[in-house]
Amino acid sequence: MFAEHTTDPDHVTAPHPCETWPDNGRGFRETLDRIGDKWSVLVIGILSRGPLRFGVLHRRVPGISQRMLTLTLRHLERDGVVTRTVYAEVPPRVEYELTPLGESLRATVHALAQWVTDHNTEIETARHRYDTT
Picture 1 (cartoon, rainbow, N blue to C red):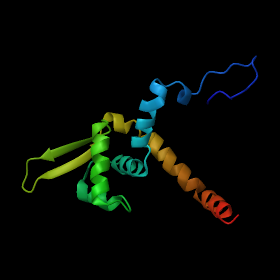
Picture 2: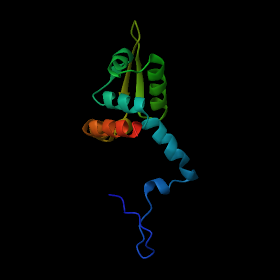
Picture 3: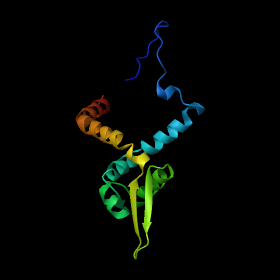
Picture 4: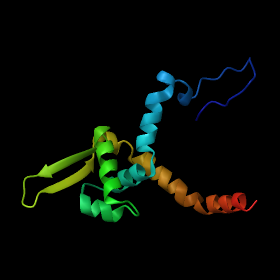
């Protein structure tokens, strides 16, 4: 667990990881932007069950356009989270799967999805309350 923040000069705590990144956190933000966006989280979660072809993946990611899925997969591939394998067949078959780095996100993505599932009603209630006041 993270150390508690305090203003007491006699109680020094270690800085939170978000406070200690070089370059003012640029790399940290870029990585979070990539792996933390809604489409990447869904793609990583769905690919955590094994490799899929583009069309199957597209059907399993609710609400994503083909263009956005293509862009998401390219970004995840660039970051080393997803690999793209092209099979020399007619017609060509292309599969996407998580790399070992992507696999290391499995538990985090599943925990986040479970948290959203567990707290969705509370969040919707809070949004409604906020929007009506």
